[in-house]
Image: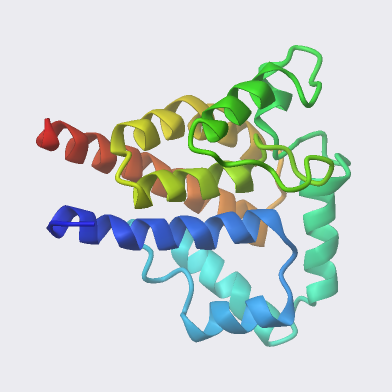
Length: 199
C-alpha cells in the first residue's frame, strides 16, 4: 500500500479480520486472552457507547461472571442451530421462504471467485455468512479495491445485519453485531471518500 490513506486502511483490514473471527467461531480461552490483552474493542475507530458495553461483557467473562460455556451456548443459538429464528447468512434475509444457499450465496460466491477466493469447505460455512463476508471486505481493502469494498458493504453486509441483530438477545453477541454495523457504516463512507479522491 502507499500513501497515508492506505496506511489508515491497513488498520481497517485488521479490524475486519478481528470482527470476522468473532462472528465465525466460538470464543476460546486463547481468543479471550487476545481480546483482553488488546483491550478489545476500545481502540476500534468508531465513537459509540457500544464499545464500552462489549468491553465490559468481555471483562465479565474474564472474571468468571459469565462462563465460556454460556457464551458457547449463545453462539450456537445465534449462529448455528436457528433456535432464535435468525441466521448469520445473507440468503436467509433475501429469500422469502428464509432458505439458505440461494441466489445471494451464488452472488457472493461469484464475487469472491473473481478474486480467486474459494471456500475450503462449503458444507461448514457458505460464502454469504457474515464472517466470510467480513473476511472478503478485509481482502478487498488490502488489495486497495476501495469501490468494490464499499459497494459490497453497502449491498450485502448492511443489507441484512440490522435484521440479524434485531433477534439477538442482550449480551456479548448483540454488542458485537451492533458495533460491527456502526463500524461498517463508517468504513463504507471512508472507502467511498478515498475512492473518489483517487479518481
